[in-house]
Image (cartoon, rainbow, N blue to C red):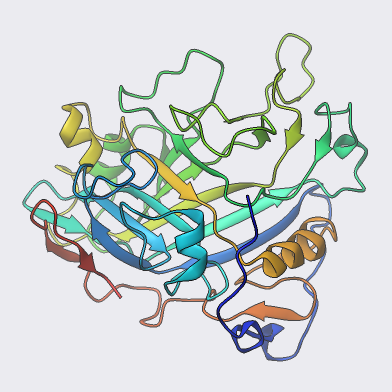
Length: 339
């Protein structure tokens, strides 16, 4: 994928880390390096530029984060060339998932999402070619995109992929892969989280594939008990956990489901998934890969682990609780800004 020259002043989108330029602490006993950022919700629409490119209004209702101009016609080039971001101003990537419906005609809008990138540092022996993969560890390829989480048929995989989905209710101490268990047990005013883990192996050839999943895979333990990328996936990527947090509304979420569940007529939570279309600023991607991942640091809030921090990746402008947490389901084809 060709580089797209930035059309913005990168320096103005960076600040001294936490006001002082402090370097974060080491990941300590955890072997990976970590880079984390916070995203506010951007918009709702019935578009999906990965599954239905160029077909506006074709998909189930999606909740978008990141580039505020992500729509059915978005490409790597268009995202890099336009739009602002709710995931840090230098991260024009698009992140989206099925909207959460309360079962009573409303969308539950999240408070925020966290994106937690991690990977072994290049210096780790397991990152060397031939160790956990044929060719070793690399940074995220420019323009990569994929769908991860559960399938539209209910989450069943035939090739040892994990679905990587979990639900939590913080105040009630609930955690389950079954959405209905958490949704019914999470009281009004509590925070409910949806957690999805992206794949960490790449085929080295395709930025996308017809099913939007086959270009990447998870490491597996196979029959040997040793974690490795499967045959045909020679590179280890930084993976990320995408966690989206909602405040449970006054009426509770016992009747809630995701828009993809509703469309497929399947049990609540059984089709939840996420989509990602990468459009990172090149220099910023290199900075957090070198600083946080290969430096084995624990970067949070868009801290690049080099004394600099992305502007806009620490907290939504309204704080940690969304003041507009429940809105009517938009009409098909309608786009609703959330910021």
